[in-house]
Amino acid sequence: MELVLSLAIGVLAGSGVWLILRPRTFQVIIGLALLSYAVNLFIFGMGRLRTGVPPVLEKGQVGDPAFFADPLPQALVLTAIVISFATTALFLVVLLASRGLTGTDHVDGAEDKV
Image (cartoon, rainbow, N blue to C red; front, top):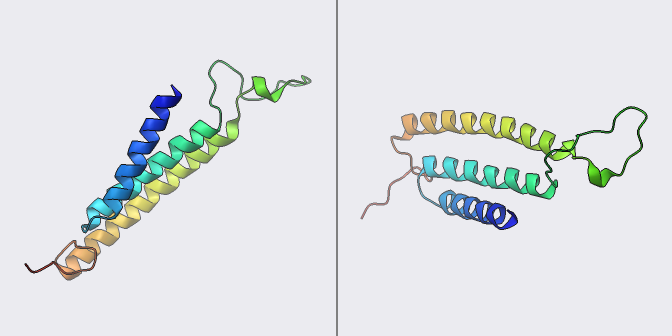
């Protein structure tokens, strides 16, 4: 399972970086979204996501933290998803405004004349 998760993070991060370096604004936005998905999966992987264990200690119980799920990575990823959604929406509005003003969606505002 670790290999699949590592490959997924690597493919998402690599594709995101490649798309960020493209000359079109929409490709840059999609690259940022893929990169944020890679970071979210990385946070999940580092949080030792476990199944079938309670997330917190019960009242009056003393336990070993190794036997309980850590709720912090899940809360961080949920927050990151909300922030990335809002950021993507903002970028799309800026993209539409920029395209309306310049007539192109090139990142420097001008097409290469070849």
